[in-house]
Image 1 (cartoon, rainbow, N blue to C red):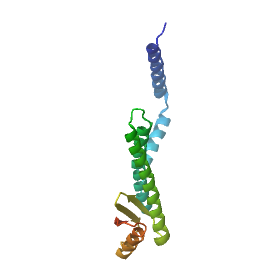
Image 2 (image 1 turned 45 degrees about the horizontal axis):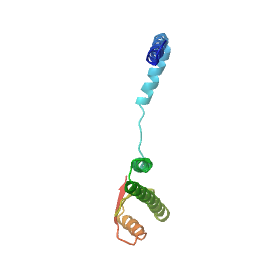
Image 3 (image 1 turned 30 degrees about the vertical axis):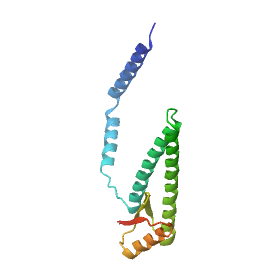
Image 4 (image 1 turned 60 degrees about the vertical axis):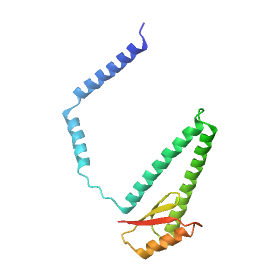
Length: 164
């Protein structure tokens, strides 16, 4: 009788044998076409725009927050976690969701008032804003800081960076 280990060995060996025969029997024309397609992709010039930088920052920020959310969800779903750990994880999830909402509110404010695309990263007492604009205008930066500060009762540490 054949056991599972032998069956897997025979299956994988057969697959490797079939792929080897297929590779050997490929025409030279097909191989040349594949090689030229690879070379075409190497010669392309990629141009980065302002919005690409903002999108990259957004994606990085979203990935960080998603990782934190998954970590908190794992704690909540873990049967071995204590009640205090679960409560802390739930509160941290709420804070994370609230910070996402605040970031969106600030981005919408900047878009409506100043007609600028921006990336906003919110910490507990600081706000970092990256604006997609080629002009580095200090009065515009001060106006953005004042507009964002008007959303909060307590004083926040707000930085504005113009991205070229």
